[in-house]
Every structure is written in C-alpha cells, then in structure tokens.
Picture 1 (tube, rainbow, N blue to C red):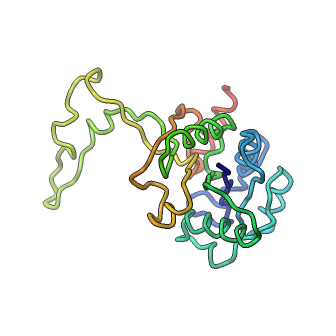
Picture 2: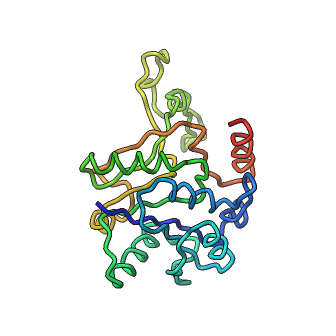
Length: 228
C-alpha cells in the first residue's frame, strides 16, 4: 500500500491565534509534524496543505511539500480535514499520482513522533480495516464521576451505576487523541469522516498525545520537552 501524507495547516485558529506557526521548543508547531512524518520513512512526499504564504515558506524550510496550495474555499473554519485530504488526493490523481490510503497528521499534535506514525501505518496495513485512529488510555473514572444537568435543573450521574465499582474491576478505555488518522479513500468518501465502523486503533502514551488548542496546552508541551 502507498500512503498519502496530508498535514492540514491553515492560517486561521480560534482559541490559540496562528497555532500552526506558534513556537515550540525553538521550532514552529508545523515543523514538528513535518519532521515526524519524514522520520517515519513511509511517505514519498510530506504534503502540507495551506493557503497561507508564510506557513508554506516555513513548511518548505523544514522539508514539507507545498507544491499544491489549498484553495480559499477550503480554508474556512467549518472545512473538515476530510475535504482537505480528498482535495489533495484528487489533485494528485489528476497528475497521475495515485495513493491507497490517506494519513492525516494535524500539526496540533506536535509530540507524536516518526515511530508512532510508522507503527500506526504498519498496524493499519495488517488490520484490513478501513480506518485507524491513534488513541490514549483514558481513566475509567472519567465515566465513573460524569455528572449531567437534567432539564429540570437537577443533577445526576450520566452513566448511572455502570461505572460505580472499584478501579481494578473497571475495563480499559481509550480516547481518540487526533495525532494520527488513516483511511482508505473510498471509505472516507462514503462515510465522510475518519471513524467509520471498520475501525482500528493505535495506542500512544499520554505524554506524546497532547492536542494543542490553547496556550496552556502549548505550555504543557514545552514542559514535557524540557523534562524529556
């Protein structure tokens, strides 16, 4: 199988302004994902999809391929990574470059590394599933203590008594961390997201699974890097 690397890196972001070029450990955020993709050794090109000239210049400096620019109509807040990924896939297909799977790597997961990407790709190839997402172990007590406010204003346990048991008797759960998303193109078109029924997961440690959405998340990444 031949994987297409898609790094979506538009200029706009709401909670952390210009997140994709925010500095982390002396490098812009997008650089960490480009370098991890290159280190994985599984891609012929590391494509960065952006509409912004400054992001394109930075991406190229760190080894990203920015030869196919994102059109302005795919640069809004509500445009999904699915649309961006399929645009790149279809543009390349029109140039005679075909791929068997899409690997979407968001710059907002800067601590995921090349071994994670290569490991996820290997698992995807052997799983025979249509989709794969990277995940992180989730403390089941998040379910245990989940509380909802009801329409009448009162509060109650969201899951009832299902998780009210000692920790050692709780099953293992995971959360999607957004670091790696893989899909077969035909399944992605059909389902419209990266999480269809034929789905597998690639577990990652918590310290490599930080999703940067706020300044606090960015500070956490800096702390992890200093402690590594």
